[in-house]
Image (tube, rainbow, N blue to C red; front, side):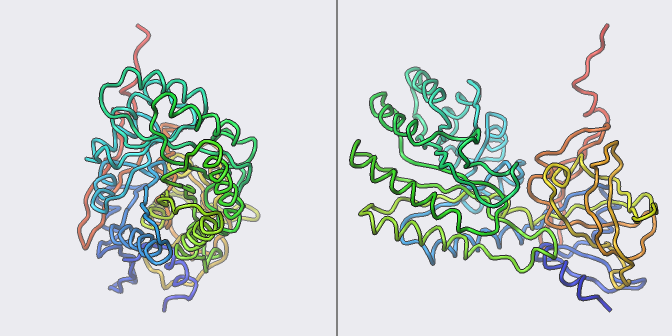
Length: 445
């Protein structure tokens, strides 16, 4: 019999997750594919992405925008959460824009077939190579600071073809309630420009012939309550009133970023959905524009985490069970090299055994990786059954900011990534091998 806690944890797994009863006990499946069989074929650590969950997340955002916003709207997938050519191809099926940070992410977007009209470029310290790539391949470039704007003025003079539309990234001096490392809108943030610099940029662009069309801000990532967005939206709309009065300019597009949270642990449930987040933003913009006599701008949202996190599960193999005076350690074959989030900002995950889910829980377990760091702990004090070396453990909500921040620490090889869709499993990123690890090395003699 499956425990209620198991069922609760399953709410965090991809939508197509099922428990298959068979001889020898139950087993997890996603999109009709056995996780045990996939681990045997592709090895571990292993990352699995469920197409149906990704599709459903896009549908939820589109429906929320349709129901709550009277003006035009669009969705930009934030590539920093996780980007590869297969995910770019999926995004194009849904006509999503792609938020790329720098020339290399632009190259991935182009390799996946993203057209210029759906590529948007961010970056806090764009190099000349980044700016040149954005000019050549993007429809929108988000300007972070005045020195960057000066570089763009020079680039525009030497550009014969179309130049991307420019949006200004504002720094509202506000932040959402999240970890300090994922707050981006506060006064001393490295991101964006204050209103004084932004006003100077608005003055400068028409003089220099630059196509300025939008305003952007971002207060932080992985926040659960949209309320702190209200003063930032109010401030931005007041700034629009000022710009219209003084300079006769209004943004065609307003982008309040992304950052909406997902559930990583059963303690996060129930979590407010996309409908509440989108409705809050849309309602405040519409009410504010109506009160201030402003036309409705196009509303551009930039979800990354909340589109992709739930769609993926990471699979690890248990190597050693170790008991210390106060802890039961389940030591896995992955950790900070493929998921640095717990070590970086205390992210809290849950997990389930891949097989025999009907087993009773046997108290808390600490799940650590094989790497030479005391901080290499994926999960702390999570109720788990008694487990044996060689068993598989599945960690849900693994689609965002894990693979994109993975490393080769201690010689770790980056994991394989599998795309699951209606019973079909397709390799979309191969596991690194030793030759990949050594390819950059050159001998002294």
